[in-house]
Length: 367
Image 1 (cartoon, rainbow, N blue to C red):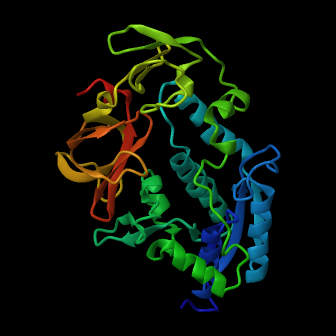
Image 2 (image 1 turned 180 degrees about the vertical axis):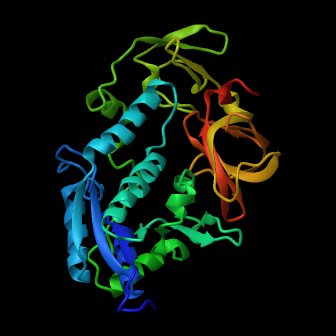
Image 3 (image 1 turned 30 degrees about the vertical axis):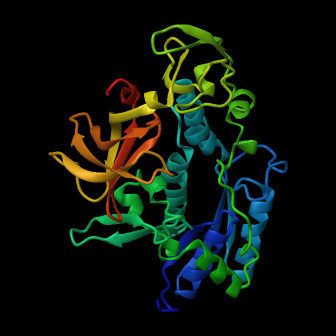
């Protein structure tokens, strides 16, 4: 327990959910001077959205209520313009480039451990804490390690792979050792109003998980008539733009065929969507770019690791060969389906996140 006379100040990112609420309560009991901060990320009225959305007025009200109960200061910080620039624009541009974005990774890096960390500095706080299910430890070599959360069902280390050493070294994640059920139990014991609040599995800023509608109506992505083609280039039909499709997609193609067709490649230059069989989605080799190495400096030689090609992917063994441009070539020991450009590929050694990178469109040209 820290001294009550000389408490260490920590800024807790409060989303209005049970996780961040419990994190704040636990840190307070551990002796930290806790300040709750909710980032207002979305400029428009969110009242029509589900109550568990982190941008909604109910979320702000819940976060403020928890801080009041805990007796800690609460601040609502307007980061709507930064969110629009760093996350919404990225989200839109990636889809238009034929890639499937991961806005949660970008939001963590640029806002939760970017803008919030800067706020912490301004307020004299040494730490930024969140309700993520991941663990942070100090290695003997002085580096700050990122590790999986103890609860395999809730582990969120995948979404944090892009954090740099200066961000991780000032981060606290009190829930890393807990399961979701334990977190709810901890919240109930403390009488927190968010204890039984439901959580959303969707992207917080996309109403009803309708990406196409969001891209058209909110992000201003125009429809562009293009062609559906098979692997041989035969035209099978037409669509309204590659931005509205993702690798592995089967539903919503509007094509008539004797067997189900899947999106196997997106060609933004020619505005073409290539379709094929499920087997056409299998790959063993691909390239990642903009690698971020956490456990150590960029390696000079190839290494073996377990990789996850999407959040819900169970992981598979791979050989990782660093490339001179800061990327890496990934060779999977077993082929995997729907390796998707724009998604993160994260490297693990057991529970330790070694690093990761962003899957490039080369994923579709190497086989």
